[in-house]
Image (cartoon, rainbow, N blue to C red; front, top):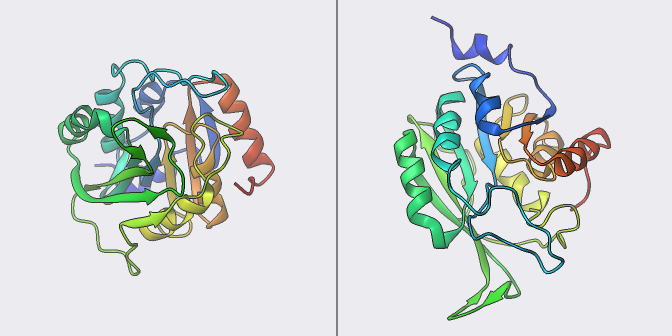
Length: 224
């Protein structure tokens, strides 16, 4: 039987792949990545103030299949962190559980501003820690409430800051290991992996964002 160590050598490292993440992950061997850090579409049919949109943010057809492939390519006894849209929590939970993930924790990033106001002021972003098997606890566990760093969304409509992503990479992976982001966007998680001495694989469907992410990594990342 092929081992996780053997399959890692067959995975292309330090690249941003242009394509559908389900199709791309199907070509990857099982147990071939060490940590997944991703920010998939939240499913609100989002449109930014400057009218930018996100591919597949208006449907959940990709949701179950993408997390099933993430579970397959993730090594045993390893973790994934995924941002999600809380109004669609039921759909995300169903996809995670059907893939085989267990819930390891919930992370809240508190904002100093309201990104939206309805019944409440929306002053946070959130992510779930998903676990496969029985990974060891981190040497320095993170708090489950952390401060948000705003990027200005200059490179992507929902751009995440590398300053909030780097601690996640450092907590749940080791230098030299492979970090996968199947929804790479502008490449922030890959930049965070690169900056912390990890290898990365990013997958991005939108051509413009693939170009942006590739450019960031070729230029050794951006500060945001």
